[in-house]
Image (tube, rainbow, N blue to C red; front, side, top):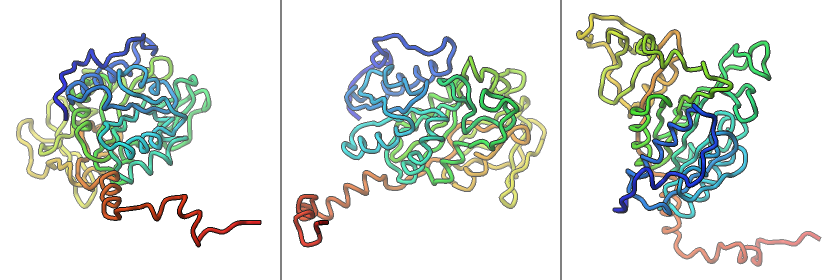
Length: 333
């Protein structure tokens, strides 16, 4: 980190932000500005890379270097940037359609390599920019322009997808809970290796009601659970419900408020199995989890790459020109 004092305002764009009024992207954008300012790096140390979609206008709205690339290819473009200059803080902004449909393969390989990218996947469960088609995260039975009788595709669970790939940092935030999302982004920013952050984000024209229950003051405490390392998994309006893991199965137990039974699990974000179980929670059987599901360490791809280059030393004998003129090359006539 360099001791450069910038504020969130310094990362704001000089041009109007063109999203629909009330779009959840605005809140996420504000938190990214704040997070970058807190990191203390100068503008030129950041690169924001996107694919195609509403969220992918993001690079225009952050006062840093940026690349608005092609559909689904943001992780590949960002990987090249990070590998060329590992000192850069490289952020990928993508949506559920861009990142998990056409870009699913690129996303998969970026995560498995543990390359140092901060991947923000905005999940509004719809193709918004193209006016409301079913996406890979659209819930079963949802009627859209491409599924007028209700979708029959089982939806992607992005957080579980990332945990299944042994991603070293996986979290889920909510656009209306900026305190939580801010904490998640700060931790993602400082993570070495791939940080994958799914953010539930409302789309007013096409999925406005999608997350209403998770935001309703009368319902949200019973429908959601905050996952925090070292703290018991409890939830409910009266804080009288807890999660118990028995034989790799999850159960809900109820108890008298304030008397948490010993069997209620204490969350461990370094435990891959626990992260996988919690990421699979679906309503109405279980509360929807938010927070950091997984945080662990292992060497990043760029670290392994540069260690290997240093170990090999002089690579002139393996350069393309040398190989093409050597005895292993042949000419097809």
